[in-house]
Length: 361
Ligand SMILES: *Cc1c(COP(=O)(O)O)cnc(C)c1O
Image 1 (cartoon, rainbow, N blue to C red):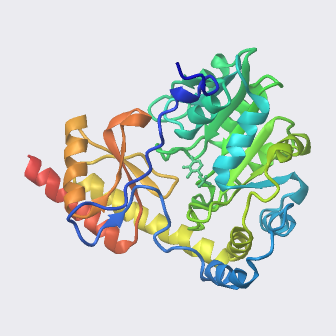
Image 2: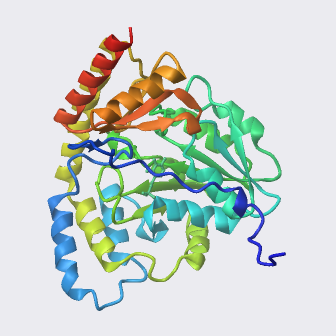
């Protein structure tokens, strides 16, 4: 018998399935399955990547001071309370790894991001899923699931794939209702798509047990570089930094992220275009008989009449070169998650869904 065995929990993790990016035999494919920015990264970030090339023989900064200061300046946050990671995924991983282990529970909501249970299991902890209510996070069900073994609560706000959002008052009620030994993680990957929203920074600021995470993968269009960050109490950030590899972020990633966060015009442009195209897309889908909740993100959760219809529409969209995301694994077998693309992509999606609906009748 093989004596090499992994730690408990690890073999319960299924390998991650990313959004597809091509369809066999179909040209002119548009990928709308991973919530990427259709406008790409800021030209200033691209320039920073180019400039970094000549210095790649040097190790990168280990304390990320320059990027943390830039983030702090833009968001009005204390740089010493910020930690940067290889995507926000790495920051989420640090939190679970540092604060949860065998016998501990990590709470996430029914339709929450699929990484949360994976990270819990990787740490040997037990993921606990709590119900949502009509595709909205239910603060009371989180609070009633919390017990002596709970270590971390993950809240995606706005949600993925629901695109719905809790109000600030509801998040405050959650933060104040949790026992002091539980860390509340506010995963604000889509915060920039909500005009005037701080991602929960002001809720994290005055509390000892709240961490907000953010990413450069969504509105900044830098998913390929892998940069995210977290903002929390100094005591927690200090713990996380102990397991962070000293050179977790490359010099190129640091330079691009810094240029990107400072280019506020580009972020404002992307937010405005997303809002405009999103309402056009939602309206077009609605007119075709496909409903969705008002979205606070750069995607729409399109609800069909049945699982068969959603899967049929997905196959039809694929045949038209449009790749969207199935979300049965998130508890939505009769829905598809569609990233808001550029104007041409949105028009193609609406045209194809309408054609599918008419043909299916
Ligand atoms: C995309 C996403 C992230 C972040 O991903 P990184 O690329 O690792 O920064 C985190 N949470 C949610 C809910 C997301 O959708």
